[in-house]
Amino acid sequence: MAAVTRLSTRASFVSSIANRYLSSDLTSHAPLRLVPTRGEDQKNTHVRWVFLGCPGVGKGTYASRLSNLLGVPHIATGDLVREELASSGPLSSQLSEIVNKGQLVSDEIIINLLSKRLLAGEAKGALGFILDGFPRTIKQAEILEGVTDIDLVINLRLQEDVLLEKCIGRRICNQCGGNFNVASIDIKAENGSPGIVMAPLLPPVNCMSKLITRSDDTELVVKERLRIYNELSRPVEEFYRNRGKLLEFNLPGGIPESWPKLLHALNLDDYEDKHSAAA
Ligand SMILES: Nc1ncnc2c1ncn2[C@@H]1O[C@H](COP(=O)(O)OP(=O)(O)O)[C@@H](O)[C@H]1O
Picture 1 (cartoon, helix red, strand yellow):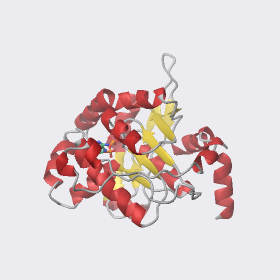
Picture 2 (tube, rainbow, N blue to C red):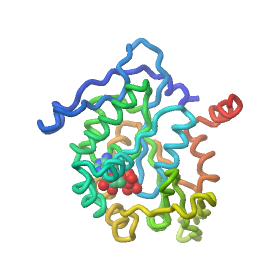
Picture 3 (tube, rainbow, N blue to C red):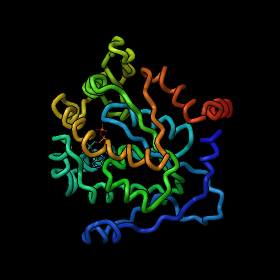
Picture 4 (cartoon, rainbow, N blue to C red):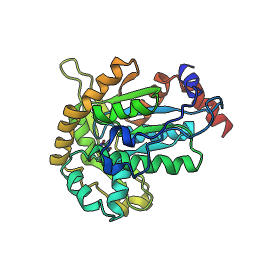
């Protein structure tokens, strides 16, 4: 029940950070608001969770499932970057060069995209968030800490050879946006490390002809993203570990094996039962 209790923690009003943390040219953009501007005494039920983990680990998959279950927006900064890329707006060519090399976009650009997304959610009355792909640097974690209390940080873990295969096998339907994976993973237990089996996550027939691969999911770029994760994002795990907020979760396999265990780790097994009974 601990997680359900966390769902009803008090709302906190978040004010502008732009002039506290960012370069002056950003102060004209939307401030980063992480929680709607409602009364502190109002009993808002919301979640302020963060997903950490290497590229390809499944942050998007599990964050999106939890978002549906808990009725909280799933905000993936990678999706915001890809939307900006697809919009052919002023940032588009600059972003495509960075993303296709597997590098990180500047904190300024990311905060700006995230702020806009949060304000749009706020305008629709969204409460709380499940962040995926942010924070990715210590500076981003400090910015986040300056504006809101994060309740929980879930760190998804998988061994690196599996991550590489999963990224390379990832496919997206360019019509419905569904995420699939053609990789069939079967790694035997070795030298004390457990084996892992992950069945492919194949698309329905009507998506088959519309599958695309992300331009940054090539072997070379994935290896660079993993290197950058280890250098810049791994310290973020330690940041939250030191604050007692990190839940480490070693994925035991694909979605059928991992999802129930993740719900159990989050004390949400009852929550899912009640949710499906009410639906
Ligand atoms: N918080 C962030 N800070 C900087 N760059 C980011 C951030 N989130 C996403 N990006 C950019 O978008 C790309 C795709 O992000 P994402 O879909 O989260 O990828 P991954 O599968 O590597 O976790 C990243 O490689 C990076 O260039």
